[in-house]
Length: 88
Image (cartoon, rainbow, N blue to C red):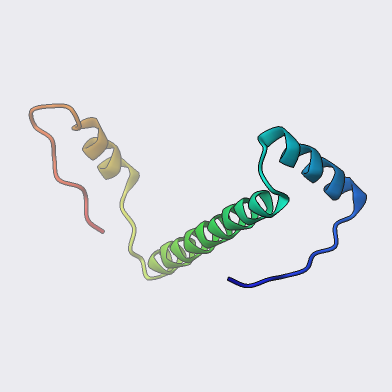
């Protein structure tokens, strides 16, 4: 496990200290949880960005599906005659 020193401004330190007491958890625990959550969000943001780039690339290559085909497919959900998803 690594060690990192952090200097907090009072507007961060005071609420952190208060939350630490309220939750009966160490500041270290709260900071670790916050950093883990931040890293998970960044990872998800990066993943979504990659998905967006792939989608844009597909559009540039002309790979798209007509809206009417998609709606027909979606409208078939929950029916006895559910259709297969449309293909580009």
